[in-house]
Image (tube, rainbow over all chains, first blue to last red):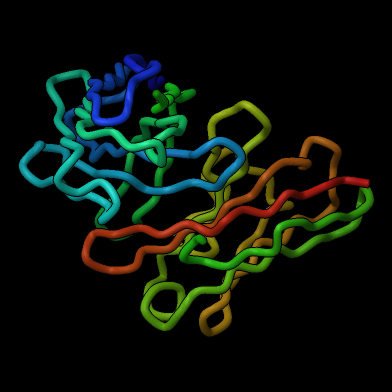
Length: 116
Length: 110
């Protein structure tokens, strides 16, 4: 099970830290990622972190502004310099990366609204 | 604009089959065997339905099947049921640790 938190209303240029609590599987053995969905729009991959946390990857649209990290049981996404176009539901997902590149379990999402 | 192209809508009557296409390029769908399909009901999280072009996760009915020809992947839903009405998204690995998604197809069961 994956449960996100930390979303909210923030002004352009602001920051937030999203969290995702994982349970029911061995968290440390899976890569994890974030996927977002703007209101009424499709899915967009945002970021990925390896099982060890030693490797991180970002979509071009967020690189340099977002930072993914993890600890023993939680996944995080620090979002800085937020723009109106970052408004979206952010889903945490368990990832089978190398050799498959699939998101095989998803949380319910947390909404970030960027507006003045 | 999404990286992969899907038709915005598809429909079929109960019991019929419907196929949803997903068109990419020779750098993603046409190159890698890493196409996935996700089902999303309104207000819910996406659910993995197909991975690595043709494989079904445990628990996904065998009415769902995937295929690929050149740069286009397809999801076929056979024996349509009312609960299959949802949005469907394709995705593909695009190299350099990057995954791209399609814009989604709304499947209506008539």
